[in-house]
Amino acid sequence: MKTFSVITIFPDLIRNYADESILGRGQEAGAIKIESINLRDYAIDKHQTVDDSPYGGGPGMVMRVEPWHRALAAHNALSPKANAAEGTHDERTHTVLMSPRGRTFTQRVAEEWVEKYDRIVFVCGRYEGVDHRVAEFCVDEEVSIGDFVLAGGELPALTMIEAVSRLVPGVLGNQESLDQETFGKGDDDQGAEYPQYTRPEKFGSWEVPAILLSGNHAAIAKWRSESRKK
Ligand code: SAH
Image (cartoon, rainbow, N blue to C red):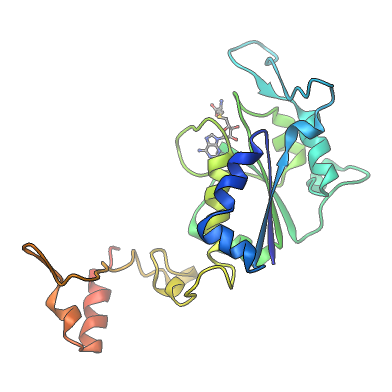
């Protein structure tokens, strides 16, 4: 069982997506668990404030370090770098900050995580971002989903959870499909998946390649391997 914990000020965004389709079924099957934690529950004032204006000036608001520190400690998810008396995580837990400046998430990272960790904890920024002490001391690494800027870390977290979950046995109906897929596995990267077709054989003048209807498995395998996008 893999656990994904998402800390956010929009816990319903995570729940709504995680309860449907593959992630929903994976949870029902007991292969994965996705928990959504409200950062505001760990605010230090009664108004549940989690942001403040930036030191040095500039536009927008920055998320404060204390709510993040409290939330991570309460879930035993603080990085050992935090050097805290309590609340640091064990070696099978990995805590990541969603950040456009982080290392780029790829299929290789998903494979690494599924192997090394039982629990992954996602820190979702909002506003202009998160007080840098969270990146420095509270999380294990900063990870990005690409060179563009979103309004929050929730979509990046869900993207990573979905990519990792597909690799957890019992989440996908057909585990075999993983080997043939785009980005392959490990060093076996065979390029992008071959083109797929289904019924009808003919849609107007658009026809399915005849070789796929030939029943000649060796010829089909050859065609598929040649049709991969490298
Ligand atoms: N001012 C920041 C952007 C803040 S966007 C900058 O210029 O870098 C607000 C939050 O959205 C970030 O803290 C991060 O958690 C999330 N986010 C935005 N784009 C992201 C990306 N490409 N990958 C991962 N997280 C991202």
